[in-house]
Length: 312
Image 1: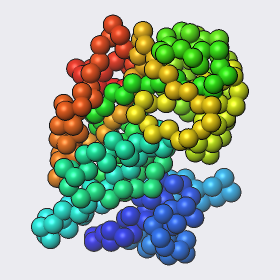
Image 2: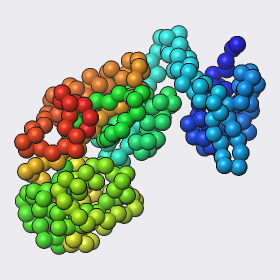
Image 3: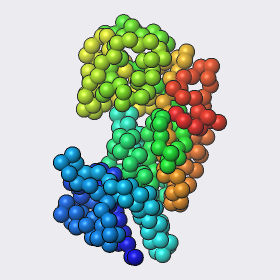
Image 4: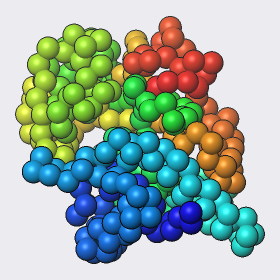
């Protein structure tokens, strides 16, 4: 039985999305073309892979069994092309956590990591699906558990976090602040705290009882909202370039200093040579710039790194 990888790719994407329209859009084909590819694959296999009904699309038992080896077949096909041509395609890298400018870290090592093709940016669940699906090779952002068992990650940077607040805030004139001094304020978040693991854990650890959420319309808009109310504060990694927001103050945090952990993530078993170059470039830069310094007596991490670079 000869499998058409275009049909297999259509199946895998539809299985990930469980929505034929979104799957077709992500493959840059029409929904009709996607449906035809899946129908031909089902005909070849002699079984239904999807159950379509009034409640939406779901995988049949056969579809669930077919999905893991179908993913592996796509990965093997891609590796075969690379081996035959003798050329490395660019490493496909995506990021998440855009408010904190993740690309500035990757930009610092890009010249030593070989050709990279940046993605459009997503959230961690979407990145996880894209990695497992083989759509991207690596991703960069803050990882928090649970992470899918099929993925590997490595902490590459621990970045100190500053408090940002408006000039009218009672603590705005302080040269440094302890996190517990912020407990009486309003932690302003660019989205629901159940999706913002670092801010949620900070609030729990340092007894910040009042939180409020905004809509993420970009860093300048978000920080403008912080500066507009003397009760509000938020947290931003220290090296993030801040926009020119009138009345905004950025104050270092000490005793302890919160650290924001940035990680590289990839699908376990991915052997793209650019991946080893990227991890090596990050390790080299970490040594030069002391990116992985962590002292539990003075720093705070939601999950301390195992052996200097585990969960973060």
